[in-house]
Structures are given as structure tokens and as C-alpha cells.
Length: 525
Image 1 (spheres, one colour):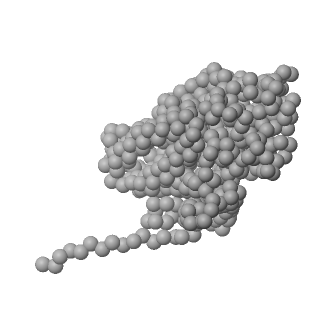
Image 2 (cartoon, one colour; image 1 turned 30 degrees about the vertical axis):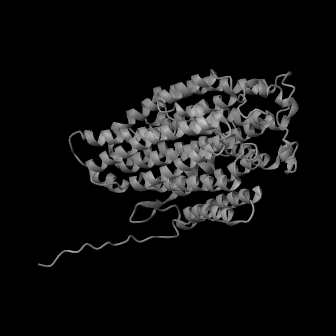
Image 3 (cartoon, one colour; image 1 turned 135 degrees about the vertical axis):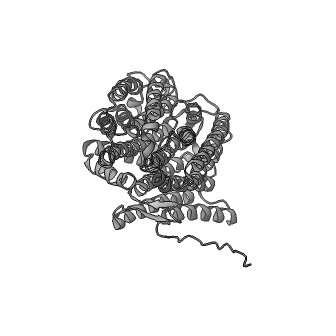
């Protein structure tokens, strides 16, 4: 009897699709190799230049791919990863986030005693994980991207280990992140047991049009996936780690956590819900609505209770996650493919627009904190954090910096003619279009409540009396760095870019709205 032989057939690989990831990972490995073999330590500017060039290259390649392929889905690795408008737009955002984070961190690495090559390599590795999460079409690949992002962030926070608060933040993030990963893996196992596949498109095809009794195994798997991704985006009640970790982490890393890491988590959530589990929308939509209610309320109320600017922005980030959930939960009530396509497109595109707008506001805000914070002057590395009094009279000492911070804060509050106002308007419009009038009303109320927290900082900056200590002059080790008005030139450029995008998108939002709408068609149709 002839013995059956199993033959492994390797999947075809479209290498052009993977170019952004190859650039990010290749640069990270190359930088570590050169730094380890160099006879002496590399100058700090080398690592910064490599990180900036790599992030810019990944963003440019993604933009060119979108232009050439017209945002059409282009799968590879046996359909486990797909390059489409959604993943490419998020890849551009990740690349820009890497550039801005590297610019801000350049003047802060010595202050936190972080080695530049290791910082840049970890930053690029986490960005590669974020790109994988944005384009993953398989739950296993999504988990790999999630772990690549998370593990790099654990170590990135712990690099500044001479500060006790930073060590505590890194450990707390690691322990809770491990628990969330376990929930996510268990959810993958239950969904595989229910559908027989881990491929998102395969799961969607299996569930499409199926008439079955309530599948409790599938519902349990969905709930566990929501727990795992809810931790990553700091949605209530999975948010407990965020304030302490944001406060203890170095300010440049905090900005990256609040923007790019959060965007990657929401990108994965959108793919799972709208590609694999679209047929179960009536089951998971109420859960998302409940998460949005809790996240909006807790984020807004806790933000106004803080006396520390960094913790206030941490709770503000939780509130903004609630607004993104408002958009994603706007599942159309009407049945039928046409209604689902239109309503689902509005929901995801509004969430994508919000993520992009908020990412620039968060990166710019934490860049301001990086140059104003007390860690610049205090000889005690464990000194108290960014108290409101630290920002008193900042407009008198640094009028341009105070004006930039004011624009970013007012944008987060949703003041008209800023990107924040358009972003809030879009998610609320999507919620109303799906019949979520109560959730839309709660979102508007919490936006007003959150505005009080931002205005407290603005009023403190423009108060006639402030702290005598400038709080923004550099230590002697940094005196030779290029500066503008006493501030690090690289940080000035990052803050200027954030403010410019916030204002331009607020005044002329149509182009970004069109990009967001075009990007999500590939995961809705």
C-alpha cells in the first residue's frame, strides 16, 4: 500500500506589499548591528536620523502604493496579510508618528538616560508591529503584530529605568498586557472552534447569510477579543493601567502610546468587527455602545479631577478613545448589504478620521510637555510630575509655546476651526445616522465636561502670575544642541507640524475626509 505523503506548499509572497514592514524592521536590525559592532558609541544624532528617515520612507512608500494600486485590496501570505486603503492610510500615520516621536525624543534621551540606538530600534520595531496590526487579515498575524508592538513598548518605557515611576509603569504595563494577551489568545481559540478558521475574510464568509441558533462559543470568543483589544486602546473598564503608565513613561513615549499604539489597536478592532464579525453586528454593537458610554463618562469626569497636566491628558486620551468607539459602534440598524455598506462605511471612516486628527493633537501635546516638564530642571529624577502650577504664566515666558499648546488643547476640546471639532462632529453624525441618539447626546455632554479640564490649563498659562522658574531651559549637556528661542529645534519642528495639521484639517477637512472614506471601502465592501 502506497504511503500518503504530505507536501508543504509555501504561500506566494508579494514582497512589494511588505516593503513598509521590511524598511522598519530592516532599519531597526541594521541600527542595532552597527551600534554593537562600532568601536565607540554612535553619536545620538545618528540614531535620530535613522529613525526619522525610516519612518518617512515607510510613510512615503505606503502613499506611493496607494497611488499606484488605487487602494484596492492586495493580499499576500495566503491572504493572511492584506494591503489596502485602510492599512496604507494607517501606515502613513504610523510613519509620521515615528518621525515626530524621534524628533521630540532627540532632546530628551540624555535626560532620561536612554541609549539612542536602543530607543530608535525599539521605536521602529513597535511601528512595524502597528503596521502589521493595520493590515492583518488573520487572527494569528494580528496577534503577532500586537505582541511586536506591545513588547517593544514594554522595553521602550523601561529604558528610562533610573526613575522609580518609570520602572513601576513598565512593570504595570507588562503584567496587565500579558493578561490581555492571554484573553486575546483564548478568544482566537474560541472563534476558531466556532468557525473553523482564523482568517478574517474566511470567518466573514462562513458567517455570511448563515442561519444558525445562537452560537455562544462565537459570542464568548468575540467578548474575549474585545477584552484584549479594549486593553490596548484603554477603553473602560480596561483602562486602569493608562493613567499611571502615561504619567511614569517619558513624555515622548507617552505621546507615542496615546497616538500610534492606540491607532493600531483601533485599526485591529475595526478589521475584526467589520471584516470577520460583520454578520454578528447586532451582538457586538450593544457591547461597543456600553464601552463607549463608560469610556466617555470616566475619561471626562476623571480628567477634570486631576491636578497634574500629564495625568489629565492621560484621562483625556481615555475620553478620546470613547469618541472613537462612538464611531465604530454606529452599526446601521437597517438590514441589507446596501444599508450595511453605507452605514458601516460612515462608522469606520469617522473613526479613522478621528484617530488621525487625535494622533497629531496627542503627539503635539506631549511634545510640549516634554520641553516644559519639571524633569528638565529637577535634580531629583523622581520629582513630582507636571502640576498645574508648573504651567502658570507660561504665556508670559514662552508666548509662542503657550499659543501652540492652547491650539492643541482647544482642538481636543472640540473648538470650531480645529481638527478636533470636525472629528467629534463626524463620529456624532455617524452615531445619529445609525439611530444612536442617546449615545450622541452623551458624547456631546462629555465633550463639554472635558473642555473644562483643557480650559484650566489654558487659564493657568495665561494667568498674570506664574512660577518664577522658567522650566524650559536645557541642562548643560544639551547646550550645544540646535535651539530656537531656548527650546530644542527638533521639538519645535514636531510641535509646529502638529499645530499646522490641526489647524489646516480643521479649516479644510474635506481631503482627509475623502481619504478616510476611500480607505475603509476595502474592509466594508
